[in-house]
Image 1 (cartoon, rainbow, N blue to C red):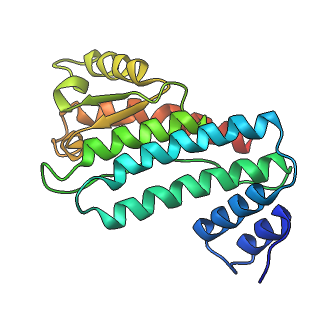
Image 2 (cartoon, helix red, strand yellow; image 1 turned 180 degrees about the horizontal axis):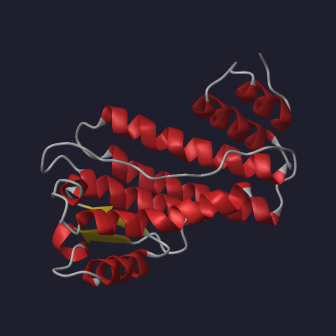
Image 3 (tube, rainbow, N blue to C red; image 1 turned 180 degrees about the vertical axis):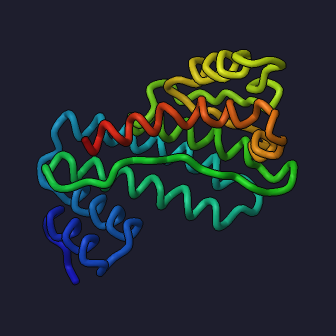
Length: 199
């Protein structure tokens, strides 16, 4: 089917006729064939060019073919949501929490850094930096110490990505372990945001 207008593409996504990645490509084709490109479209092109350069960095990594496809799908999903918002259509909330799993040295941190750069260029993150922490950076030795350490790390990561190496270790302790306090401290702001969005 030929899609002549962005609204047609957005409707096709809603009805499940095409995938978000395919829709993103169609929207780009429509943008590139538009007769008169304004100055703002020129700026948009430079942002898209910078994002493509960042994605080439991802493509240069050996293997990770499924991850590369998924990152491009996330990029397409965010762009489509932004377009829907501009057209005053219903949008899905952007919740971009992720779990990276794999053996040491498989590129988890590298991919997270690349995603931070992409999200910064797209305007999802203000800084796009990556703060890498582990259990010892979040969990304190006494009551009340964990919450402060965790909040300090969250403040450092504000506008970027908080990458928790071996995050499962926060939940593996027993009843008197302070790892659960770190989890509660990180999850609490998101619970409040979700409640406020639906209230």
